[in-house]
Figure 1: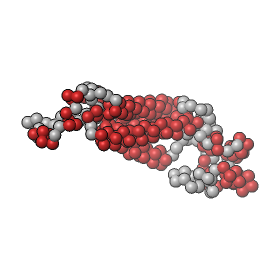
Figure 2: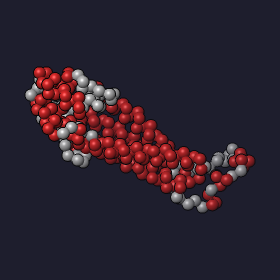
Figure 3: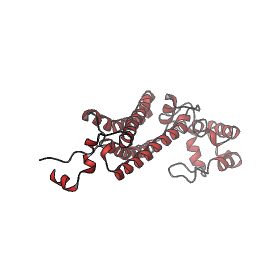
Figure 4: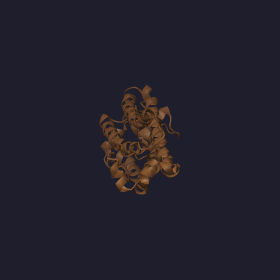
Length: 258
């Protein structure tokens, strides 16, 4: 019994290729924006532009020579307040965050520069309340277990679905050894699990910080290869006319293969 030839990317119907292309372009732009967001948050954890091992360690293990508030003000939050006001907050945290300074000195700064985000955005502390800011004035030990758990499950569920779509489309690519194609499809999932596991390992032991960078780099490269390969094969790869029969075979001929 003959079977219908498997439809590879160059021979997919136009509407399907348009659908796949829209998805891949949106995912590609999303990955670029995610990279920029990492540079603006984790990449500033040590107070210097660019992503380094220190940034990773400070983000997950913490900078245990400083308070969490000081680390944030000298890192990812550095651009949100003038140097003088930031230094006032840092000095207050170093002195143990006394409540006596809240109303006359600290609260006006917080109201002007902090609460626009730290009172309206879900998942971050409300700095209208002194207790929340005093909690940030403790030694920086990185994210809490509860916070790390929340972020981990969001990443695993959400990003896995993105990689599923990219891998599903790439599964229609032609010219690849099935074993190599399968390894490339599974690679982003493996690197994602490695990345998230490395967050927890780095919180426990800072020496695992390099594993976070390796995992993130790995799934970025694997997904980029699949995205560009799929786009190229759908729109630029020339297929001999004799191989395009799947596109043009009459319905009766297709039925005869069943």
